[in-house]
Structure formats: structure tokens, C-alpha cells
Image (tube, rainbow, N blue to C red; front, side, top):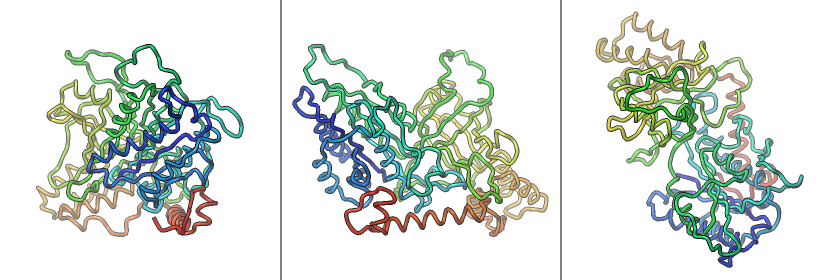
Length: 482
């Protein structure tokens, strides 16, 4: 169920007129309407949620939020007026806070217990602005700055204001006031040189520099295609490069580091993504720690270029995610090695050793048309042979020696994997190998704090007065639970 949030520049400079005779604000309103029409052609759009945020100060800038209807959004869109400053940073922060409001109640971020790609709330922010100088109460700004402090409870748990399933795309209107005698350049739409572009790119999105109505329609059609269910991951090479092959020519090593999505497809029957294993945290949980270390929005996944044998054991579940095309996927596909894989790691995820143990691998598809990330049980090269023996050799009646090996393996696994392991063993038909009272690794104070945050957000959602004044989120009627 994607969330599409439109962030509209309502600063005074949006009153400027293009050679079409319409103001930039009117062009922005028309762009939103065209986007909605294009999106409505896809049957999947029936599950979309739409939000509208302007550059006004909160709470007035929140024009349509979680509980507002499509009709409310359209009415608020038509009523937008261009007055005030280009307060892009504060308005963008308000937009992220609005998107993140529900996450602590639903628990999809799963703080301290591994990141589950299948727990997601994909969101796209479409910002429409004229790219004028960024202004605020302190004057003109050369760079886009988002406020570090926010009244949203729990925001300190993530270093950035966004999450791995939220991307920012910006349409920067550059349509001139007079018709140009030069022919319009054909081809792709360029990135905009404004300070907004780096912010788009860091979330996994991009900016578009729009010079004509034709380019605007081209951008909107492109944006509709960007509505994908997935999460953004930083992939980085560790260790030496693989030996070159005769067919491959070495160029710029852009594949060493890629900031791209993995697609999280919904189950065709239920419409909801299904998965089994998390991507590990970048720390080993400490039951004595009163707090959690802040988490980076995008996990840092290291891949080793040492060819390994792909491992899959019948009856043992695994998760498979296709990577968004990138220099990394192109490089792997050009190697034409669909029967080997590259292991993936998260640094500091193990109790000992900086690199950690492998939690899965990257592998080209057999048809060499895409690259997939396989997410497995933590330290899968050790546990999969054990589980294979459990099934094929011991027929689910393991001897003492096998149990000892399994217990030794468990000591190397982050404690938050126990729940997923228990479910997997139950699916395999071996439900009694893990005690129900095994610890999960979080201290009592951390568990209590996370529970308190959920209750606090729930209270804010039920209380119109505190909701407006404490979080800056607009309430125009008695608030309902999300």
C-alpha cells in the first residue's frame, strides 16, 4: 500500500508566470492532477494513500494526512496560495515526520531486532518547486538543511529523518517566462543543479530539471513507474576484486559502491509481502545497555567478490529480492556466472570479528536477466549443512553430537534471529529444538522505552489538542486512531 506525499512549494516566487500564461503554482497543481490520472490506470493504485504538505508552517502546512480522503486532498490542492518563504528544509522535515508517525505503532522498523525488508510502508515524496533560493527566518541559505530536532517521539532511533522505504523525487520548474527560439533538446530530463538534488539522491530518489510542459509530462510518466515496493540498501565491496575475464573490459569501478533498491514483491494471493529472515543490525545486542545505538536509514551491506557455491536446503525457507538495475548488477551479469554467488555481510553484526558472518548472497539469475539478493539464516554456511543432516540423515531425531553442534552455532547468532529460527524449524517439522524462554538480546529498559513510544504515539493520535501542538500535525476534527 504505497503512500504518495505531494510537497508543494507555496512560497511567493511560485506566483511567477511561464510563457504558457499560467503561474508556477498552477502548473504544480496541474502536475499533481495529471500524476493522479496516470497512476489511476494501474489497478494497484486502489491501495494508494495520498498526502499533501505545503511550505506553510506546521500545523497549517499539513493539508491532507493519514485520515483525510482523496476529495479533501483535491480541495486543499485547489485552495493552495503562493505566499511566504521557500522553507524547503522545515517543510520536508514535516513531511518525513508525517510519514513516520505510524511506524512506532506498527513496529515495522523493528529497532534492535534486525531489519525486515518485508515489513515496509513504501512512500514517495514528490516535491514540486521553482528552485529559487532557499529562505527561512534566518535569511537566505545556500544548502538544504533539515532541522535536527523534531517533536516526533522516537526520532532519535534513526540518524536520518527518512527511512529505507521512503524516497524523495523533486520536479524543479524552470519553464521560462518567454518562448525560446531555440528547439527544445530531446532525450532524458537532466538532474537539477539546485541544493535539493543531493537530498533526493541520498534517499534513493532523484531531481528533474523541467524546462517545458512536454518535459513535465515526461517526468510524471517516469515518476509513476518509480512507484515500487522496496527498500534502499548501500552495497559496498569488501576485499579484492574478482579476477578479470576475457569478455569484460575494466572501466570506472562504480560497481564497488551502489545505493539502490531491492524490490519487495507482495504475495500474489494476499497482496502482502512475505519473508522469513532479517538483515542483521550493525551491532551485537547488549542486554545491559539502557539504550539502542541510532541506526542509519539505509543498511550498509558488504559483498565479497570471492566466488562461493549458492546454498539452498529443501524445506529450509529463504528470501529472494531482485536488485534494482545498477552498475553492480550490470557487472555481475556481464561475468556470466549464474552458478556462483558473492556472500554478503553487515559489519559488527557478530559478537566477534568486524566483518561479521554471511547472512546471504548476491547471485545472477539463471537467465542472466537480473541479480537477486538471497537472505538466509545468519551464518548460513554453518547452519544449512546442520539442517540438511537433521532432515536427511537424522530424520528430525538429532543425536547429542548434532545438538552440541547446533548449540555452538546458536552462540554465533544475534539473539533476535531466534524467533525466525523457531518459525523455520516449526515449518520444517522440528518444533522442539529451541526453548521458548530464550533471550532476545534487548534490555528491559529498551523494551520498556519502545513500548512507551508506541503508547505515546497512540495517545497523540487520539488527542486532537496534543496532536496539533506537540507534533505540528494538523487536526481539523476529532482525531481517530490510525
